[in-house]
Image (tube, rainbow, N blue to C red; front, side, top):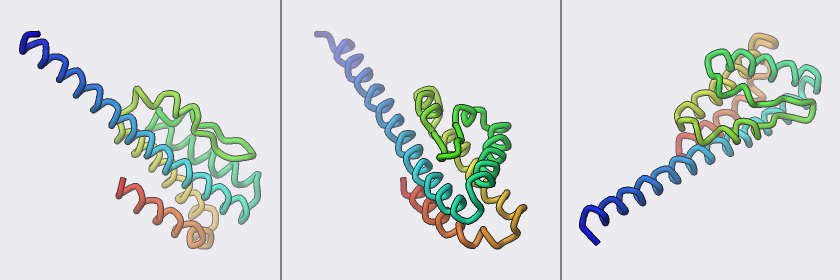
Amino acid sequence: MTESTEQGKHEAALRQMQAEMAQAGKQEILEIFSELLDRLWERINSLIGETACVAVFRSALLEASRDHALLQPIEIHSSGISLDGLNTTLDALERTAVRTGLMAFTDNVMALLIDLTGEILLGKVEPLVQQFKQKLDKS
């Protein structure tokens, strides 16, 4: 084999490895946010009830989707939040875009809670969000 063929194979293998690492990083972010949103859902649902919880999350998603179209496949049902639609489009997305979009969604949930209840509910869910933000910073 010639040296250029070997170098081409090496570069192709390196690109493949980088793509796999990028995909793993996006998947990790999605898993962290999935856990955060599930726990937020449980806590908020127990505090304000299912109907109000659905309304808060749908409103927050609608607002965040205006600036972050990648969030549009997310579904909110009376049983919780499904990120499966987002997971199917993950390959085509940038890692930072995934993180920024999901952070905007989470921040909008928090902002709506403040708008609706002042600081009352925020104090009950903010420690959870801070815990996950620290987890994200480590990933």
